[in-house]
Length: 637
Image (cartoon, rainbow, N blue to C red; front, side):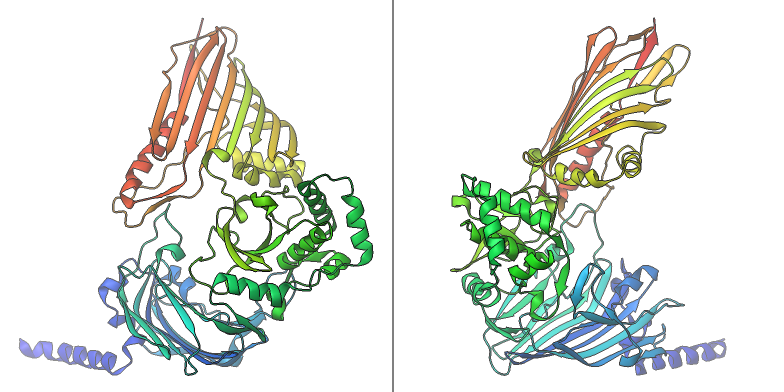
């Protein structure tokens, strides 16, 4: 009996020997089970080594070994190498291994595809990227990526993000920085608590951190961004080089002073003809704000946005006179141009650095090269006005969700100042919808609507002003009222009040077969035009905090005339739902024998809440969604 098992035992021992004799990080068989749970990929080893050799010389070595477990994990491979005129790649390679650690593919530096790293909206740029696009035939597989490059710009010392994304576990991640010349470095640890991170060395000459055996974290909807949740290490040098320009910043004041003196000073020159023209335009303006509005409109009418990302031009604006001449520029150029025009008419303004798009703050406690966009600040005697200079259509003083409610760096001649942009919160983001609705005996609806939107709701709507009639019809049918069948749009009239920042929509609509009509009963959903049926997904074991990203308020009022020959039955009582997340009030009132008035007010409050509140939030939205589908029955006389 024992003899029968000997061949199997021999094969097992031989198989185990082969795995152990290879590098364990190359075979998926050696991954601990707890690191496979909830994981699409496992980072076996990620090492980044940084050598700050001088104020204008930095060498970076990277080695990253990742095992991809399934097709979704392909997106985590990340075999990219970005470079530009002051980033020189000396070594670059990728090797692919199968599940048992056998090499199946190999790429040297000259086998990488090389393309521009920017979109078609960029006029010129020196940013490029080398990459490998590998299509796997089997899972799991392992990718070993190695690179080495030098950079003369030390303004951006690589950060450490030991946990790379949701659904990716980490076997080992190492960050090492060597500083042999003892340049003055600053570090900041973010969100380290609760993660298996070790600080091996933190001296003037060396920084060394490691993370080991971190299981994958599942994504959960309605939560903070990955960057806000996960650990990271920030590193910056007080003295640095940026595209061969020496920089300094131990705090935001000194950093802003450096930016002003080295990147902005002297770049506001304009031709005498332009100066005379601008002065003539504002000659009748009585206040600085009036002057600023005239200048802003002039800038919007004259220019368009196009990106410039080459050399120091990635951070330094081109001359105002050049923008004036050619009529286009990037955010830096257009902001600087607007500032130069305002200088001419004596209106003070400040170049301002911001993180655009996703709400992200310039870190007030950590001075470094930050931000990806530039806007303009008008101090306005303590009542700040903010201008977005890259849009030809946005109203004066309105930012929208692109740059609202975040810390920004305001650059003044005296130095940098951290300020916060305006926040469009909750009731500020209001949509008011009034409708006159006529039902007929066959279930058809004829309706006239007036919709007014303010705040972020204005921001979400104003872009449709430029759409064609065909595009508008598709927008309303597919995006706004996708839940309504047999909708016909008879007319659309849009008005964009930029002075008051109000967007108005007037529509004439027909809805065929909307109501359900039988021999004795006429049934229809009373909330026709603004149904809010959103319910967050069920999550029984919530791990992450709840975030309601944007607060808003909807106020609806529908006057509904019923068909002749029908009577109104008993109407439901007024519904009120109140919670920490907002409120919902809905009522249906009989005005006379053939008219009812439906009124609704929905307020959602933005905020960050503990994970335990997720169930309460879901319950709140579920109750609202249920009442939003309320139907009324009419009966024949």
